[in-house]
Image (cartoon, rainbow, N blue to C red; front, side, top):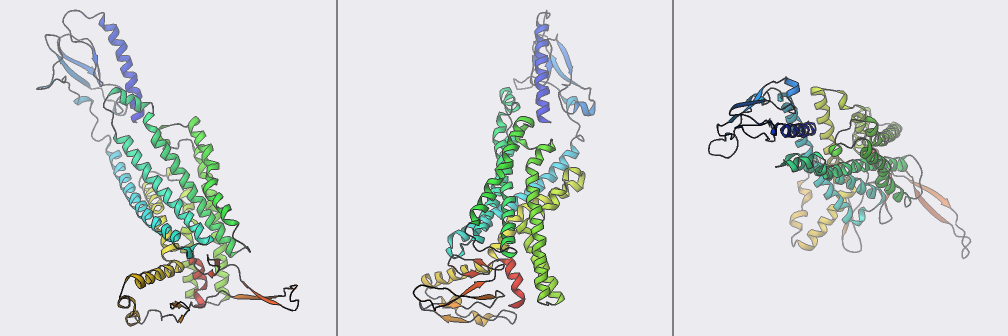
Length: 491
C-alpha cells in the first residue's frame, strides 16, 4: 500500500506542477501563488476561502468514495494565511482524513501478528542461548568427539544461524519501515528501493540457513538409517559427504531462486511470494528432505517394533517405549514440518490462518531448544562427561569436596537408582562400572597366519552394528538417546 501510494503521489505532484505552469501566465491582479504543499495542489487563487478536492492518491479514497475537500484561506494581500504563532500555512484536512473504522480490521490483524512475532522471538532467543551452550560443550570435551556428535554440532550450528538470520531479518525490517524520510528526496530514495538492499540480503541469508537446517536434519536421518539399518565398516569417509550435503546442497537451489527473484519478482525486500513457481524452487527441496526423513522415520519405528516384539515386552511397556521413541525422533528428523509444508496457510483466511501461522512459527522457534535438550543435555554420554569434569573441578579447586559429594548416598530415596559399583584404577581415581547393555559381542574366530608364528591364531571381537557408535578414544558408546530407548528393556 505504501509503495503504491508513493507512486500515485509522485504522479499527482507531476500533474500539479504542469498545471501550475499553465496557470502562471493567466494569473492577474491580487492572488495567492499556486503551490504543491506535499499534500494537495493549490492553484493561483484570488483572496477568500479556497477549497480543492481531497488528493486522489490517498489509499482510502477509492475504498470509501470520499468526495471531501481540503481548505485554505487567501488574505486580501495575496498571502496564504498562517497558523497562529507559526510560519506554517494553515489548512483544514478534516474531510480528507481516513474513516476510523476503515483500518480497524487491519489493526486487529496487526496486533495478532505482533503477538506471533513476540512469541517466536522469545522462542528463537531461548533456542539460541541453549544451542550455543550445547555447541560449546560438544566442542570443548574431546571425549565427546565422534561422528555422531560432529553431525549434531553441525545441526546445532545450522539452528544457530537460522535463529540469528530470523532475528536479524526482523531488526532490519523494523528499522526499514520505522525510518520515515523527512523530505521528498528521502521518500523518492525509498521509492526506488535503495533502502531495501539490506532487508533483501538478510532475506536471502534467512532462506539459505533455513535450507541448511533442513539438509542437516536430512543428514541426521541418513546417518541414523546408516547405523541402524545398513552395515558400514567405517564412518571416517562419511563425515565429509555429510558436510557437503548439509552446507553446499542448499546453494544448488538458492542460486536459481535468487536469479529468478532478481529478474522476475524483484519486489521490495523479497518478502512476498506472489509467483508460486519461483517459491517452489526453494520449497521443493525442503519438502523432499522432510519426505525422505519421514520414510526413514517409518523404517526406524518398524525396526523398533520388531525388536520389542522379539523381546516379548509387556503391552504397556511396549506402547510406552514405542511412543517415547516416536517423540524423540520427531524433532531430530523434522517430521512435524511435513504437516506445515503440505498445509499452506495462504489457502485459509481469518482465525484459521492466524492459528496455523502461530503454531508453525512458534514450534519452529522452539525446535532448536527441544533438539538440544534431547540430544545434548539429556544425553547420558554428555551428562557423564559433565559429572566427571565437575568432580575433577571439585577435587582440584574445592578443599572440602567431601562436603558436597561425599554423602550423596544418605539422601537417596526409595525410588532412586542404586549406586553403581566402582573400582580403583592405577591413577588413584574411582571410575563407575557401566551397567550391561543390550549390545552383544559377536565372537568370530579368525585364524591369522603370520610368518613368525604360523601356528598362532587370534580371536577378534566385532560389535554388532546397529546400536553403537565410535567414540574418540576408540571405545564404543551408547550415547544416542534412541539407542538408549531401544536397550532400556534389558537394563
